[in-house]
Image 1 (spheres, rainbow, N blue to C red):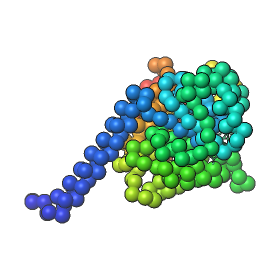
Image 2: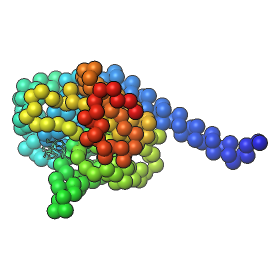
Image 3: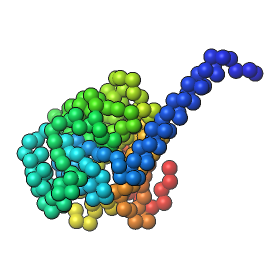
Image 4: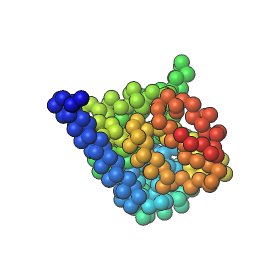
Length: 256
Ligand SMILES: NC(=O)c1ccc[n+]([C@@H]2O[C@H](COP(=O)([O-])OP(=O)(O)OC[C@H]3O[C@@H](n4cnc5c(N)ncnc54)[C@H](O)[C@@H]3O)[C@@H](O)[C@H]2O)c1
């Protein structure tokens, strides 16, 4: 049976959108591999600072964004207020101008990858309070641009990324998976643990689309030096991430 003109046009449009998404993803992946991608971490606490140090140590330029002026002063003075990170680790990167901290969200204009690591304390009903996430995303959406990757690292309930963050980022013309990329990779830092740090802890990464997953995985692969017995565990759907505790202990030969 012959295809109708409308059907053909629709298929051509889908093809264009798909190739746009692939191109944006390829450009970002190349920038990540060449270390020319810039990274911002929103929330420079127990999770954000160690993450910033890992990215800085492998050659990325990292900007920390925080609302606490004391925190900004401490980091820019080459010091750490996080137990697991020593002053010299911060100083090495600030001296190299590979790490700086600011409260100015407009830096996001020129950032390729943004990780959100703001607090999500439990409220009275024992649900995570996502107000800091929403406030961070409200800032991100002012400066969002094609090719940007946004990753949520804060601990939260399944659905936060898909139901809260995605619609906020798509309020303009940009679409997740086509123009911008969105992923969830819950932080698994264990403060005080001397054996397991960010680089040797298995990481669970979920992407809204396959391209989102691809670029998010690429960025984490740069800082995750896992031995053969540990694996990257890509997760496709947000619901799957709810079972992350099961996935994480299943390290070894785990293919999805
Ligand atoms: N610390 C842990 O052991 C641990 C482990 C796993 C997961 N997590 C999760 O990681 C997330 C971050 O936790 P943390 O321990 O790093 O918190 P933290 O309190 O140590 O640091 C959070 C930082 O975010 C800043 N901040 C708050 N609101 C902000 C905003 N709107 N914009 C910019 N900066 C903002 C704060 O000033 C602070 O410096 C939480 O969701 C937490 O549940 C923490």
